[in-house]
Image 1 (tube, rainbow, N blue to C red):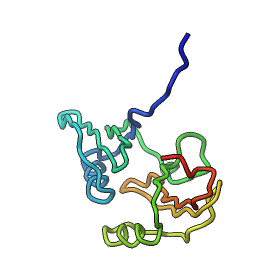
Image 2 (image 1 turned 120 degrees about the vertical axis):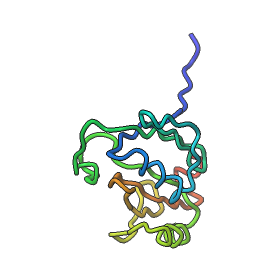
Image 3 (image 1 turned 30 degrees about the vertical axis):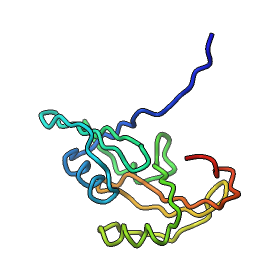
Length: 136
């Protein structure tokens, strides 16, 4: 039996307004629309670095998406070389940073923010000697 090799193909993100949310990822995070079916509506968006979202209509919503302590998928971490540079760029695009950056588990710094529907995202800057140094 061969060993399995897992690779993320895409991540599903249910949205109250998929059309607006996909446009936010394209405008704010430089995403590229790969495929869409506006009759549903569903959008596949690739972020720089290769991560792909499938953004599709939600059946219901809750404010708990903003709570990083609730069980389930809670945030997307985006590796950057300089949090301060990317933070300035995102602030120009309308991102509101409501808390200060803080130490990252495994070394480095994190800066949380939210997308247009309140889903948590954070920037992560790692030192060269971090346990995550070879993760890309």
